[in-house]
Length: 106
Image (cartoon, rainbow, N blue to C red):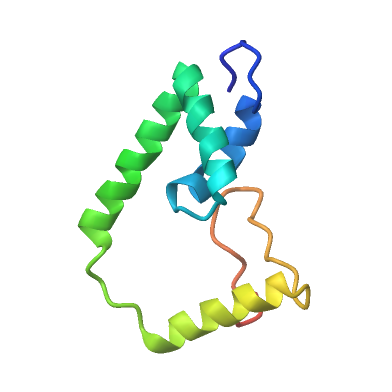
C-alpha cells in the first residue's frame, strides 16, 4: 500500500513495522518518525487505526484467558532460540493451513 506521495519514511517500511509501533517496541526516534508519517499519510493512518481497533477488540474478547505455564515457557524458549540463531523459525504453510503434524515440538 502506498499513497503515491513521497515521504521520509516509505509506506512499505511503516506497514512492515506497524505492530512494533502498536506494541511500543520501537525506539523513541523510530516512533517519532512513524508518527510523522501517519500525520502525512492518510492510507497508512487508516491502516494503523484499523489494526489498533482489532488489537483492542482481541484484547477485550480474548485477554482474559490464562495461558498454561508450560506453553508460555515453550514459546519464550523458542523465541530466544530463534533470536540467538540456534533454531530457524518454522515457515508458514503455503496453503495458509496449520503447520504439519510432524513439526518438532518446542
